[in-house]
Length: 407
Ligand SMILES: Cc1cc2nc3c(=O)[nH]c(=O)nc-3n(C[C@H](O)[C@H](O)[C@H](O)COP(=O)(O)OP(=O)(O)OC[C@H]3O[C@@H](n4cnc5c(N)ncnc54)[C@H](O)[C@@H]3O)c2cc1C
Image (cartoon, rainbow, N blue to C red):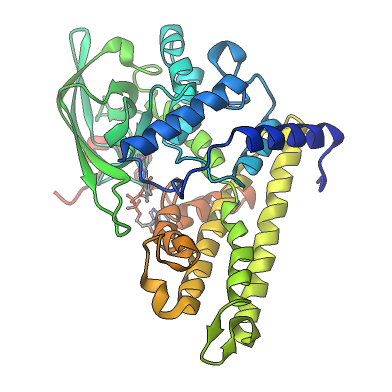
C-alpha cells in the first residue's frame, strides 16, 4: 500500500486544490438536502456545469462524452479535495454514479449519444427504480410487470425508496418480463421518462423533515422496445452493473472525518462533571473511533493504490460503508448527549456547530440501509472477501410465480 501521494498525484492534488479555491461556490449547508428548493437546484446545476467544463465532472469518462478523460486516482483525489468545500447538494450522484454508467456499459449507441453528455453537464437527472415493497435487499424479487404489446411494453407496479424521483427526468427501471422462470432470469431493464403519463411520484416524509425519496407507481405506462437497456431476460445482469457502480460510489469512508469535530466539541463543552474531554469513558470512546477512522483512511489508501495501479477495487470496498455509517451514527449520538438540551435543536441557525451532528444522526440510519444494508454488506464481505460459505438461497431455481408469498 502507498501511504503518500506519488509526485504525479501530489501535482494533480495541488492543481485541483487551486481550482477549487478559485471556483467552488460558497453555499450555506446545502450538502444534504434542500433540493426541493429551486434555488438550491440551480446552484447544483451551475456547479456541475462548471466542473464539467473544467474536466472535473466524471473525470474518468471519455472527453467525447463530456467527461475528463482522466484516471480513477484523479477522480478519488478530486472527491477528497472537493469534500473540504461546502459545495451545493449533489442531485446527480445516482445518475452519474449508477444509471448513466449502466447505459454506457449496456445501452445501445443511440441512448449513449442521447443521454451521457446532458447528464454530465447537469442538465438531466436520473433515478434508480429497483427497490419495491417486496424486494429491497433482494432486488431480484421485483414484481413490477412489463408486458409486451406490439412494439411497446406496458408497465404496472410500484417502486419504493426512490431517491430524487420527484426531480428526476429519467429513471432506470427493473421489471419482471417473465414470471415462469427463476427470479433472476425473468427480469428486463428499461429507461423511462419520469414525466410520462402513467408515472406517479409520491414523496415519503422523513424524520428530518425532508422528502428525499419517494414511492413511484406505474399504471399502464407505455414504453418503446427501444427503451430496453440490454436484452429481454438479462435485467439481472444489467442490474449487477448498476449495483457494482453503486457499491463503489457509496463505499467510501466519509464518516470518519467527524471524529475530529467530535474531539473539538469534547474539548470545548462543559458537562455536569467538568470539561467533556476530561471524562475517561468519553475519552475511551473517542480513542476507539479514532482507530476506526484511521482504519477507514487506510482502507481508502488501499483503494487508491489499486486505482493508481490500474486495478479495479473489489468487494472489500463494502467495508467502508459498513464501518463509516455505524461510526457516523455512534459519534452523532454521543455528540448530541454532550450538547445536552441543545442537542434537540436541529435548525442550523440555532443548533451548536450548525446542526452538523443532528443532521448526521438523522441521516445515519438511511446510510446503513441504502446501497446494501449492514447485514447484506457483511454477507458480501463474508462470502467474497473471506471465502465463507454462501447464504442460503432456497428460491434460486424455483419459477418466480411459484415462490410462496403472503397472499
Ligand atoms: C436513504 C435511502 C435511499 C434509497 N434510495 C434508493 C433508490 O434511489 N433506489 C432504489 O431502488 N432503492 C433505494 N433505497 C432502498 C434500499 O436499496 C433498500 O432499502 C435496501 O436495499 C434494503 O431493502 P429493504 O428496505 O426492502 O429491506 P429488506 O430487504 O426487507 O431487509 C429488512 C432487514 O432484513 C435484513 N436482511 C435482508 N436479507 C437478508 C439476508 N439475506 N441476510 C441477512 N439479513 C438480511 C436487512 O439487512 C434488513 O435489516 C434507498 C434506501 C434508503 C434508506
